[in-house]
Picture 1: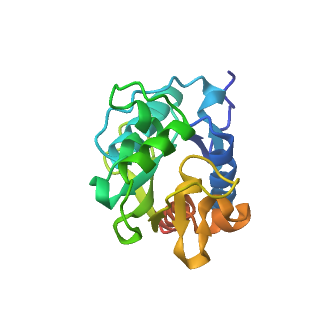
Picture 2: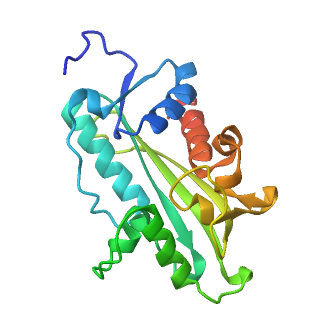
Length: 210
């Protein structure tokens, strides 16, 4: 891929997710930053071997920055359930296949496993939250990355509800709106979600000179 000759203000997003690129681009545009997908630079995927959202986000951002020579942003996110001691956590995307029992993979399999793990528990014991951590690295060797975190509190439902969203959204009950995340209008979800909150905090940190 060709790299532009004048890349001032260009930041690489350590993801090929078009939705993330659009959301973050909108938030960072007022700061004079142009966000571009790592796919434009043929950045290879990196193994997410960290033991926390922060570690995994730093791994991804550092790899993208090293490959492109540009500042980089990466995120890591997932669902934490109190009754499961924070699981599925960093393994949220591969929860159903993370134990080697061959329960399948993908959103449907993950949701089935989560419901089975919480079977019979009353609502007060089904408290959960979505977490999102965003990391900004000025360069690959940046020793002080800017880290922003956003949380979204709720409960795990006993059955899926709604057709919007993805992942665990149909099982995530949002108390203040009395519905699942998959029943929220997209624009509303994009204003109140864990990623939206992390994005806003990252923009504040960068605006203040972070």
